Each structure stands twice: as C-alpha cells, then as structure tokens.
Image (tube, rainbow, N blue to C red; front, side):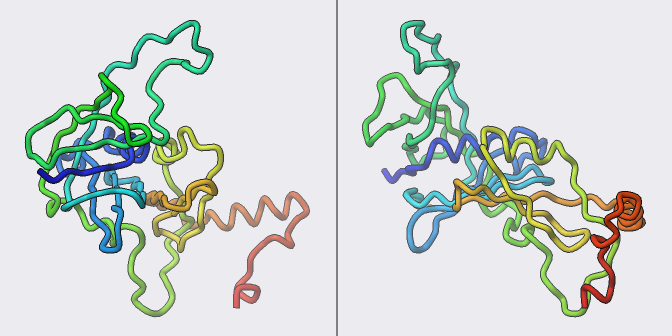
Length: 226
C-alpha cells in the first residue's frame, strides 16, 4: 500500500489555521504533490492562509488531511529538556493511503518511536479545496489599481501565523490586496492575510501626524511617486 511521508512540524503549523474554520472543505490541510519532488502543504480559514513547501515529502496524490495529536505525556521532573507537550521538530508522519481514519506513526531520524502516533483523517476530496494560488494575490489586469483606501488587516489573523516564530516580515501590497508574510528562518513558507479596507482618508491622517511631528519630509506625494 502506498503512503504519505510528511513533516510533522509543518502539518501541525497548518492545523493552527484550519482549526479556526467552520467550513468543511477547509477543515484540513491540502497536501499537493510537487512534480520535481516534495509537496505543498496549504491551510486556510478563508481569511488567512499558510503555504509551506515540504521538500522531503512523499505524496502519491493530492489529499486534504486533518491530524490530531494525543494528549502529551506528563513531564519527567528529572528531564531538564522535557517541558511538557510534544516536540515535532525534525520528525515526520507516515500515513497510509486509505480513506479510513488511522493512527499514524511519528518517526524521528527514520525510526518509529513506540507509542507515539497522531490521528489522521481525510476530511474532503482534494478537488473541493479552493484555488489557493489565486488567493495569494489578484491578477494584474493592466492600468493603475484603484486606490480604495489604506490596506489593513485584522490582527487576530496574524497571530496563528507568527506563533512560535522568532521573526517575521510583512510585505506591502497594493491597497485592498492581500498582505504577504515571510519568515527569515523559513524560506519555504508564505503567509497570506486577506485585507480589510479602512476609511479613505487614512493617508491624510498619516500626513497630518508627520507634519505635527516635524517630519513632513516623510509625506509621499504624487511627484515623488512618479
């Protein structure tokens, strides 16, 4: 029987996004094979999205998975490195290609640890998953984008993307377009946050603040942008 071999760390990062979704088709992470090897692991709740490349993944077909960890063991008071909870870094999950829910083993260094497993279920057909590439950014249609106001986002959408991360970058987008998030220590991951539109005079207020602070040299003008 064929099987999937996927990064446990990347799958559990994906689960932090999917747990916020009430839509059945988004209740798991999409695993999409890459032709040259590896797989994309994509998770979204409809407002935020996490795209990860698992370079060492084995994925015989596209699949939407949901994984659940068992209750963590009690910490050993004599083990200074065991703080409690599971540590997934460097481990991977071997999943049988079957539609039935299963207990999938977790492997560290290619070796299975007895008694360590996660519950895996296929939650929906992969072809029902949204077109995640289109959600990264709207396609350019030529001409200037209509300025609808300052691009803003709801802060709660950012939190699951940066939890447990040391640093992150926010990449500016055209007004009203999705904002991208990257991490200096993880070149194989991209976060996307859907925007909300603020009142059109946001730039005006910023200009007034810069002027009041004596830094009107920071105010952008049409001439400066040309």
